Image (cartoon, rainbow, N blue to C red; front, side):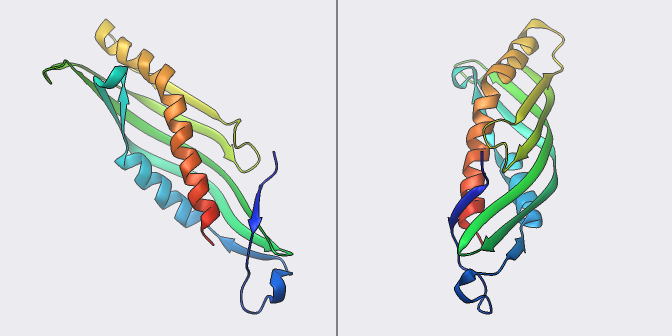
Length: 158
């Protein structure tokens, strides 16, 4: 897949946005992704379990570039986070909790639909392992939704 192209407008000095112009976006990407993961509360197991991230770390680089009036969003990022999830019954009574790790590798403008999401769980007993299994099966799609919205917001900037 090609880097995302949209109509772009360069700086005042860049008449018709013809010349190559690059705007660093790494700091914005890191802080935005860290904030979004840290504030996310994801629902698993038909809403009985709530998963939250902590120790979120984003590495890599990102920029918006403009050339010949076309804006190109270029990024190559990795995301790592720990997670904790708590299951409750219909009355809100605690059932179990578990912890684990999320890693997103090769999340880039070149691999928008083909990056790697790895989820590990530390559950030792069946109620925890049930949460871990749900995280492994349900989280990838939720992560893809979160990252897709992030890419839309990144494209809109600059």
